[in-house]
Image (cartoon, rainbow, N blue to C red; front, side, top):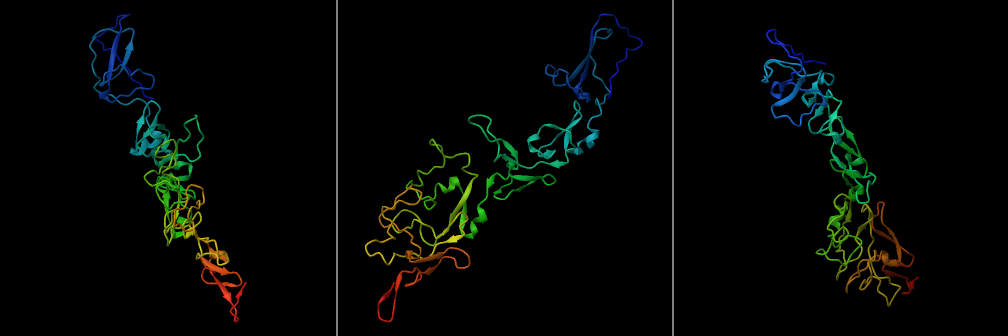
Length: 330
């Protein structure tokens, strides 16, 4: 460490008990160790060296020649011009997004040479609550990915994406048969499941009248495609054509069960939709795979194809098979 020595000129003398303050100004570039009171100093005044036995000139004179105190950040390669040196601790104060790879240390004093690039931060997906109303804290890559410190990018775990892995991904990207939407967006979609009687003007995702919840814009799900209109109104069906968490399944052709004469299974008027949040209006349609007279292959290579039971035919198994004598085969 460096030291600053004061010498009394030969023409001067010190009278015992006399106190003289020697002012060292910040403009001279001299920095002091930690522990000195800087709060009461003027902007240009660095610190005061005080002795209890001095004499001579009582007027403080700025030092003309000076140097910094201590070894600085030589051990950290002088911060590689990617941060400033704190001479009190001989550590680097790295510039924004640089440091020890942990962005939560931004602005902090770190014992590194600032060569690493900090990754983005987001609210942790796995943080523990610290009060009755607060739970999620900032974390590197939102605790849902690994930080690539050389590039400052997050490598997100499966199921998460975003520059800080701050939002959920949609499984299989909805298999190319749907839209990946946030919970807040889905709340405004009339065709989103479960179907609801609430209009888009009334739609909210949250509670207690709030417009959004903590996960409103970061938790996402698939809104599956359909070649027919989905909803609770006249002419709409209560089930979409593609379905499943990743929209990888496809419904088979629909028709009324030919064995029920009185009941029309495709009529969803006043029928509560799955999920119990809405009722079909007059003319609303229920989807009945294979008319209940066959098995629906929803996946594999035959998406949405019916295998009819014996005695039934048609794309939706909606017809009786008739033998050569004109009698339906059951």
